[in-house]
Length: 103
Image 1 (cartoon, rainbow, N blue to C red):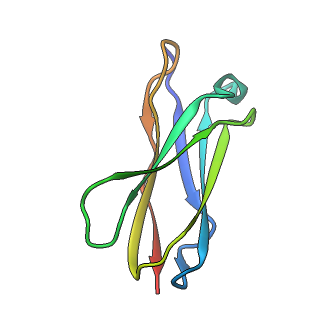
Image 2 (image 1 turned 90 degrees about the vertical axis):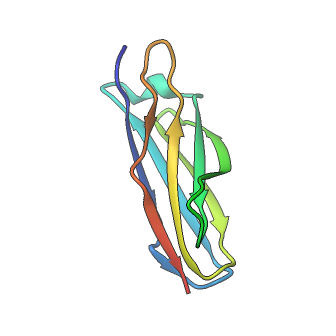
Image 3 (image 1 turned 60 degrees about the vertical axis):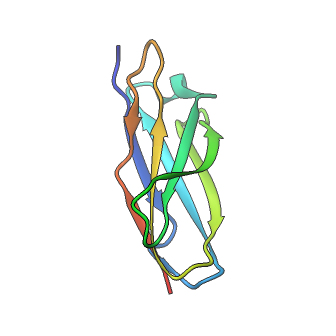
């Protein structure tokens, strides 16, 4: 089995309430196109919560990337991560956590 590296990023680390942020994830190894069409799961930890909740499911592009746009309406810090469940050929992985503060 080959391991996959998962990266996560946001378009902004601080936004105004009611505005949107774009979350991006990248699966990579020596041939990222091998992940084309794989599902990844975006998860959120809302302000004041310690529980990870499903946010969106996306398919990976030929470059190994995916993204989702989300509008945040509650003040506080949101934490996001992206999970790849793996296959027979690639190990499962979870991205680093990225945060967005809503003011």
